[in-house]
Every structure is written in structure tokens, then in C-alpha cells.
Length: 395
Image 1 (spheres, one colour):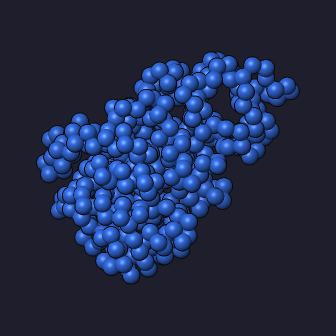
Image 2 (cartoon, helix red, strand yellow):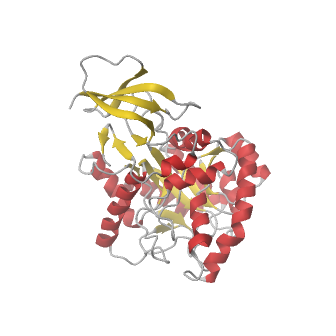
Image 3 (tube, one colour):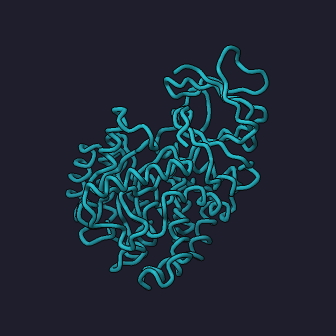
């Protein structure tokens, strides 16, 4: 495989506010990296692929997925065998890729499957799925949200957290996912129930940061959001009840917020008469507050990332494009919504040198669309989009 030039395209590079017309991209298909970008005259003596005036933009980075869960199972699909779960996880990865997702950060995976799949990927044995940043199992208090067989480390003191995080890192986790509050899918707790303490989370954050790894924390309500911020978590996941004071602290600490709007939105849309009333009511009660609180946080300057919580009930692995439409409801333009992925998600995952925007030297992970995504945020929801991974077409 040598050089190839994709020509006759409209380019949104993931950082600009407008498209580059009559653009072309030259890719070294051996390395999968972009060698050159321009418009006008093409490089000479290089084979070309004509994209016929279509729109090219970066593949999506989804920083909150659960590939081992089953969104069609009301209990998340816990109880399946490890073999069955592995097959399901591979299918989910393919669904993510087809939707335009070219990089994921897992946020809790049964049996540490994401770690094993990532190792296979690094050996070149798994080349047809998004690049995986694994987290392995969750870190939860005994009886807390996510405490299920094969799903979590049970930690009930700073020392237990310290040891568990060290074990997780030893196993290969590249991100540490903690749980600071209850959640929608757990019958015995609520969004405002505090779970892991600030002291417990702080111990884990220190250990992760010693290894230059980031810590994401499930925190839907308070005081859990505040506890996670005081522990200096790198990202707050969900954050539905974030206050103005907490948003200001997030800006000061450079803490990211992954709103996972689609995960909350699908429950009242599809859940009536299908899931237990306690689960449905949690999401319904929170939805209006979520939009109000997150809009304020965005206005105050909090950095938002793109994550969907894919795998939770009714929340399939093809829903990342719909998350951008919901982000515009917080006051973002389409370009700003996409930059939650191309810029902020890449920075949160510390991969901005290689992924995120389409620039010389970075991997050629991109999608091709029929309509202009900067004019219509629904353009990215095209189901038959072309998807390229490291310069090679996958769909």
C-alpha cells in the first residue's frame, strides 16, 4: 500500500467553523496517516479516489461506551457467559464503526474484555473496529451502582481503592472509571445518592495520575458531583445536576463533562410500559433539569466531550450521530457540537497528537457524507455514510 489522494471533497477538519472547498487529502495507506491536505492543484503521480463533491469530516470519538452490555436487555445483559459477551462486544464495535465512530474510550467493561480486545488490536489481530482505549472493570462501593459479577472492583476505603487501581492498571486499564452516585439502571439507589467518598476517589486519582492515566467518574447528582470534583477527577460522566458553582470549579480545574444526553433521552421515548416504573421515572424526572443545568454549564465555559453511554437500555451502538443533535439543544452550533468529539474528546483521552482533527501527520480516520454537516446537524445521521479507518474504507 502506498500513497493515495482523496479528491473533489468539501473538508470540515474538526477545528474550523467552515468547510474547505475543492479540497483533497493525501494518505499514506501503509502508516494510515495523512501526508498532505490542500485545495486546488492535486499532487502529481499519485492515484486518486474521487469523492464527487461530498463532505468529509473526522470520525467520531465516543468517550463513554459499554460494549459488553446489551441495550435490548432491561437488566443490561448481565448474566451472559464470557464467550457470548465477547461475541456481542465485537458486534457492538462494528455497529459503532458503521455509525462513524473510529475511536472509543470504554467506561466499564465486563470481564475486562475491552483490555483483551485492545491488546489484540495492538498486535494487528483486530483491524476492523474502532481504536479502543480500555478501562476494564468499574471501581464501586459494595452494593453500589454497577456492582455486579465480573463488572467491578468493590472498594470501601482509600487503601482498597489504592490497591484496586494498581491492579487495574497492572491488568492494562488505560482509563480508570469510578462511580460516585447512584444511577438510572439500579433499583436500590438514586441519582443523588453519594457512593464512593472523596477520600476513596482521591486515593485512586493519585494512583492513576502517577501512571499518567485519566480518571472518569459516574456522577449524576449531588453531593456525588462535588465529591468527584474535590477528588480532582478528570471527567464527570453524566453530570445531570451540575450546579453553577461546580461548573465554575470544573473550568478552574480543567475538568471535562460528558453529558451522555442520548442515554437519558431514549428512556422516556421508548421505555413506557416496557421497563420498570422506577427506572422510567428516574429519567423522566431528570430530563428537563438536565437541559437547564448543562446549558448553564456550557455557557460558563465547561469543556464538553462526546459520549453516549452506549449499551444502556434502549441506547444502541448506532446512536452517536444523534448525540450531536441533542448537544445543539444546549446552545452549540453544529461545528461546536462536533468539536466536543474532534477536539475535547481527543484532549481528554490525551490522543490529540494522532486523532481527532484531520491534519497532516494524524491518522486518516474520517467519514464521507452526502449533505453538509455544518448546515444540518442531522447530516451525520446518514445511515449509508462511508467510513475510513487509517485511510482504509470499512463501510
